[in-house]
Amino acid sequence: MARHVAIASSGSVISLVAVFAEAVVAVRLLSADAYGTFVLATVVVAFLTMLADLGLKAAITQAVAAAPESERSALIATAVGIRMATIVVVAVVAFVAGGAVESVINGELGNTVWLVIAMFVATSLDEVLIASLRGHEAHRSIAMLQVTRATVRLATTSILLSIDWGPEALAVSWAGAYGVSALGAFLALPGRSLGW
Image (cartoon, one colour):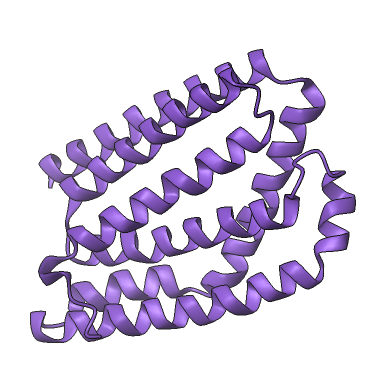
C-alpha cells in the first residue's frame, strides 16, 4: 500500500510543480486580462466536465476493481460509450450557448467556444480512462501519465507563448496535453481492448 501511495504521490507532486511553472510562465508573458480569461475558461471546462461526469468516474473505478478480469473490458467500453454520449450532448449545448460563453469570457481567447469544447472533450475522456486505470490499480501508469500531461502542457505553453500565441497557447496546450494523456491511458489499459 505504501508503495502505491508513494508512486501516486510522486506523479502528483511532479505534475503540480510543472503546472505551477506553467502558471509562472503564463503570468509573466500574458496580460492580466488574457490570463484571467484563460482561468475563466478553465472554470467553464471544469463545470462542463462535472456536468458530463454524473458519477461515472467513481462508478467505473469501483466497477472495474470489483469485476472479474473477463468483464473489465466490457465495463470500460460501456463507460467510454456513456462518456462519449454525454460529451456530445454537453458539447452541443455548449456550442449552442456559445454566444453566452463568448460574452462571459469576453472573446479574449479568439475562438473561445471551440477551444473550451476541445479542452472539455480531452479532459473528459482523460478522466474516464484514468478512472478505468485506477480500477485496474495501475498506479505507475497513472503517475507517468500525470507527469507526461504536465510536461506536455509546460513545454507546449512555453513554446506557443514564445511565438506570441496569447491565451490561446494555454487552451491549446491544455487540450493537447489531456488528449495525449487520454491516448496514453487507453494504451495503458490491460489488453487495450474496449470490446469494440
